[in-house]
Amino acid sequence: CSEVLDPNPKLFSRTAKPRRIGSAFLFDGKVVEEDGNKIINGLKETLEKSSLKDKINLFYLRDPSPTIEMDEVQQADYIQTNGGEEDIGRALELVNGFEPPALLITGKNLESDKPVDTRVGITTFAFLSLVTTIGALYYPNVEPNYIDEFVAGIQSPVLVYLLGTFAFQHVIQLLLALKGGFKISPLPTIIPGLWGIPVVGSAVSINSPPKNNNDMFDFGFLAPFVGFLISYGFLVLGLESTTQLTNAADLAQLPHFELDALKQSFLTSATIETVMGTNVLLSLADGVSSSVPLDPMVIAGHLGLMINAFQMIPTQVDTNGGRAASSALGRFSVGYGGLCGLSFLFLLVQAYRGGSTTLDFVILLYSFRVIFSPEMPCQNDVDKASTARLVALGISLALACLTLSPA
Image (cartoon, rainbow, N blue to C red; front, side, top):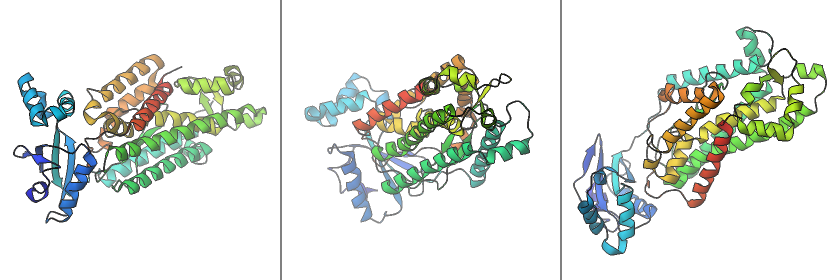
């Protein structure tokens, strides 16, 4: 490693012996260059000329361990050794955040996808759950058998709208990975739901490190946010279409959705009131069941909003929402002691307020931990995502909270 680090003292100068972490090595050091992208790019240029080319990965990141136990004297010494008075603001930021800079060197192969049979099994279960749940919507007053549910679900436009949205979202992530020069799993693992919401999104493993937190943010943020907007469009168009239907025979052919399930989302309920009116919606009920006939786009829109809202919430560091939040706020601000913990608490509160649908999300959060793989940092993991991306994160979290809050 010395042939990579020693020629670049102006980028990263080692200040201590490396610490071994498993098969990797962590180097504490002093940095002069403020731009993390320049540091990692300079080190990679040297790496390309060395014998270690194609053998190691370089990560410029923050390491909390050296400063967690610092007393005031040690902190002052740390500030002095990291640039003196000229860089005191930078050094204070590092100390106060418990995140001094470090360089992590690992082996080249970091792929951590779950076994193919595990991912295929989980996705198959999720697909069958989705199809049969949709199929059951066409039998509001009877108990259909599994085959009838499956046939009705596989033919339903609701399935087409949802799967089309999922596919478009994955294409977005594939293109973002191609643009950023990192590898991801070629197909997503669909995460099954329990009651009310048949699936709660997808898991895509990152198999090689993104260049920086802007790339990581875009990867985690854009797909669920675009899916959210598409789903809201389905909801509005479907409600407008439903208001045009007055023939009882036509209404009987539509899928029927429980009113209580629609109330699980404040955003869905508010949109129904604005576009259609609750009284008009209730007038469509047949008086026998607690469900109402709706255009398939309404159901696909509502389910899509719930699914993508859950994807935007940072429930775990390695979910889409977790990746976006950790990129914009810093990795150590998003764990279970930070934003992930607050997200978990939020879901618990909403489950208590509105019934079991959101509680399902909480159960899934831990029941399907096997789906997610350990997350790797960016090559430049020190510099956070841009301010514009931080604003976008705030907007997405507000929309997700509105969606997952019961009316």
